Length: 308
Length: 308
Image 1 (spheres, chains in turn yellow, red):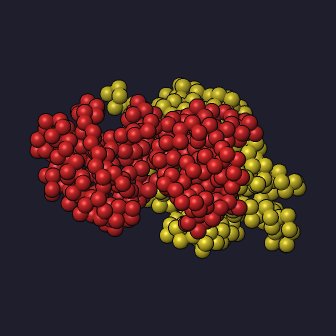
Image 2 (tube, one colour):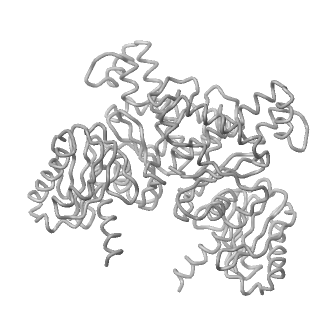
Image 3 (cartoon, chains in turn purple, yellow):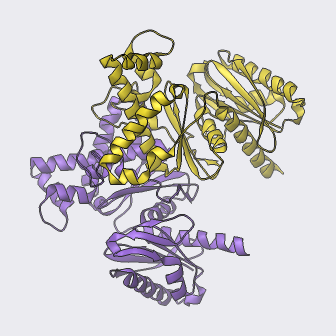
């Protein structure tokens, strides 16, 4: 049995994965604030999953934890998980000691990329594009995550696609995230509300010109990110996930329109059939927790190989 | 002994590589036009290298051929090598039959990426950015080329970085290649000359306003490509090669200015230390031919493993 955890800003999603790769149990709990509560949440969920599957924790072969923040390749230390109140946490040591099981860690978007790859059939080369408060992505080819030097490959959110575009919180202009990030849209919209991007879409439907502009910008940014991922990674599919994808077809239709508009002007883009490559994770998909379990399993295999 | 060939539009560069990885001989010949002459050129150079190293062709363990054009992963068939007059050529079968040696093929920029990786020390994750008539790139991590679905990962030339930028031959506006490709600059400059980009730089030095604009655009496009490669691939180095790099510091200084300008506005970009990641291949570097030899060797090892 392998366990995978997706530690998010509000809730933590946990799955138990059988050796066949099938998810046999899933549990969720609200995530606490700060390193101690994050660790407690993961450990409590591990006990929940053990109970749900009638497994002893000692029989869990590996654990993987996905968290927002930086995870240097080859380590299980998470840094700068600001929306969890975690500045630095050695997930491998701290949770490993509590559970008595080898624990791997990975950035949550990278974990979701690996989970999405598995859920999409586990073949070829894909990118996962996370559309949330911020924008980030990950590439997976032949089951292997592209990590790069510091574990942050796929950071398409801060690529500028318009030198005259909106100012981004990173200081550049026209970043993909400045157009399409939920946080950036909420800041520019400026009206209070629990779901600001939904509010923008509703206002755009009602004809509000500022909302129409923001909504068009979102589609422009997402389409640009899809082009970047396909042309840099030569991926056969771009899987979309994250909070903004809850808008479903209301968002997707506009992104497809953008891509079809650019393809109409460019035989080269037309030849790429970009719209055929888009996949949408279903709402509530366990991709990130599943990916974390897969990363835990892979890390455990490498350990076993290295130490016999 | 392994042989590697870089078949270019005007000349073919060939190297013999010892088992240690050292280049022990190098020869060049003008490339003929069309598939038959391309094959003859490669075979003549193979004989040149055998003679130069006192080796029998039967003792050559593998051959790799880099060519402009598309090479589907897992094949040695080159398609659309338009500037060689080659529509389609099964390099593996045709040259393999002539030489009696296993022959692998790869796109020339991807081969150069692998060669550049080796010449840079053969560690970590790098991108190779080819600045020639067109613009393309390749990523290498831990000695492995990122190929993607169809072998064309790293096609950053046709990513738009300015919706109001110059029209690209691909139909989009503001592509990296429309700003920085030698062909695009020559078309917009419009004056005859053997080295149009050099001509533009000379005219810019003399104060010609149109040349100043084109030169600034080149730096803008190259800087954008560097940002794209670092943020998508999380590469520790971007190695620049291709005809335009013959301008050396005259080009590099402007690219560094561009990157420093964007870093001054963005703490995020500043933290990436982009200018420290730039490497320049020396003029006449054998990177592409060396990379082709490495690809031939890797393909041969896989064959041997598969067939005993």
